[in-house]
Image (tube, rainbow, N blue to C red; front, side, top):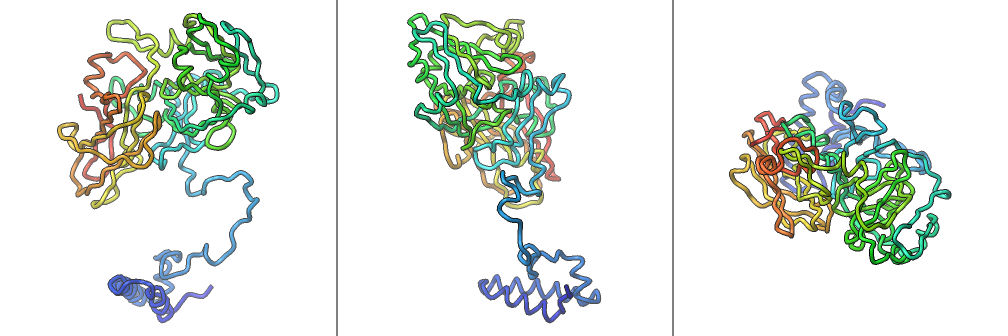
Length: 438
């Protein structure tokens, strides 16, 4: 390839300017002439091109001068290599083994409210089982008139429903009860995702089995090595519990419960049992390991809260955040996510001074029941420090508490249900730090 002459560069810029307005054209050519003049001063246009990306105007980018890959190079599509940094991450010291660990969703890099399947947070109790769907069965038994065993084919013959719902581990943010530890949004709030779930309402299957009058609870059990199980009251089951086999338009990923899982919208993620194999109807809760020694909230006086199923209203600012510092002064759109297990988000307020003053943010896009909701606030940053907070409230009137309010009622010994207002400290450099205000 030959290096274009100064004359050729000027002609290219004139051609590119033809479709611009008069003012934009004048500014474009002024900057372009300055660039070419600088190139000539150095010695040649080729020398300047070495200091100026050949893919930027007025040049034709290299990708526009050659053929791309064909349609079968990646039979199952993958993101651009320039997005390889967007992936799930874990905290090595958080758990003893990877088979009983957690990976977090990169919330700072996500757009909209749907979490791509490959980025949905993971939580295992005994690793990911490899289940042949042709050999998988769902059993329904206990206090029912007709005990049933369903194949996957049986289940997929029922009329399906698809619903967008968030799922959140109740330990989301749990590392921050005593003080700020994690300098990343992914680690402070990343045990959270939102997907379109497709399956059959559990109520439909229980109607087939015929729940007896004494049946007040169900036990949902997984087919993994831990046989993870949770007791769920029948009122929730008859309301909106789903038996799910697909996620965001495709069959469940193995780490999300393939081939079958439960979704309890708005409730602790651990109640949405993965690799679902058995549902037993009973007259009282079972109080298994994961609802006694685990997933209970230890209070300051040593007692523990029992069956705290609902994920309370919560929110967090995703831009700026430690992963998304402010690059330069000027216009900025403050963005974030809000969610509640009680229904719909009604509003979100923004504070720039640590909660002294509040301004209403705009809710963006879809506002759905028990789903993530985007919010936005447009402003300018001139290099001033901020103590940036968001405060969500839902349609029931519940308002996201301050950290001091939460600690006053719960102490600091808990792990679960930390939904207090979060604070990002924006420094004059644009860097963002995780801090707490008490």
